[in-house]
Length: 226
Image 1 (cartoon, helix red, strand yellow):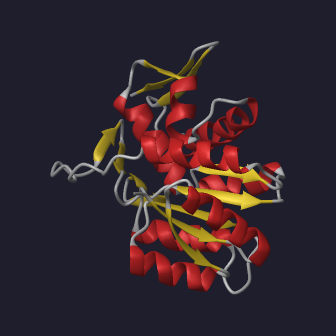
Image 2 (tube, rainbow, N blue to C red; image 1 turned 180 degrees about the horizontal axis):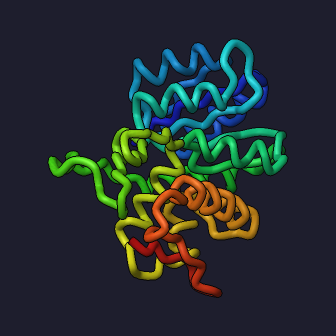
């Protein structure tokens, strides 16, 4: 049975969510602040983290950043009343997989948790071939680094995942809807705007080699030319 690490500083809401998840068959580890949540993450190795953004001691974004250093694939779902585009983009940049605005229904939370668990697969063993070649760049996907003539660009988790998807489909069209479902879990308009931001950033990182381009394929998606 899946283990959920729930981190929520509103005690009443936390207990309601915990009880509702347990009734539906989940095992729940509950923490009331980010520091306690980080300790439970290290102690129990949960299947998914559900965390509030605004918390004492360690906020949800800082918690996600710490978790991503130790586990690059664990699903993270944010619960928050903050829904400004900059907040959502930052959450995804730090490796969040989904974002649920308060107030929310338990049915919606359950559906989103199950969707994340169904998509999660353990990572394959690292390939021994070293960094990937993208024109004159070297892309170290596990370390989230893009190197050009000895200079390294540190990528966020989501930037690295998006570039890997583009690399795997290089010189072919990567469907916009497919990458939104794979990395954001939903191809809605709001997530589409976030994807546009990340594509712009990757283009900026790759600007030093004119033979490398990320092209828009109107109405379909993107193509990495390398």
